[in-house]
Image (cartoon, rainbow, N blue to C red; front, side, top):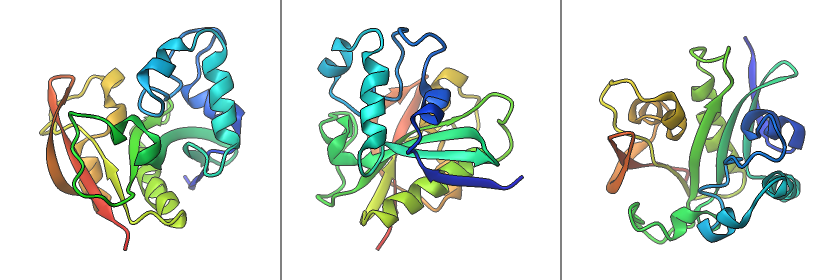
Length: 190
């Protein structure tokens, strides 16, 4: 399997990964950490997809996609922290004043899980941030200590995934997801 990770510039592929089956369904579209909660709550029907279509057209786009040949098999939301809700999140601290990037969502399509794609997505997110001049990239995974994480909450990643990619723990947080504490893990790019 030759997985290639590329910038998320094709809306149809982003929609495959994070969009609903029904275009008017009120689901995340990976916007929960990307835009302020008031704006997120005001989006209804097809407005979420319309916003994601605009974000995909921007430079830089809102994340990276993994492909197995021509088939999209994974997504990672990654962008400058200043453009996310992590810029103002009281439960996840800022380690310093660097203009770091955040990776907040890693998703692999059913039928492709267990093939190492999340590792490739995280490596691709690191490369994407580096290519855009980020001094460092952060993630906020759960510290599940090897215990099973509910699939609906696994999108933040696990400590072991981030450690395998070269991230180190930079801070503990006050955030908890699925009963597990979240860590602030960082990969310095300088």
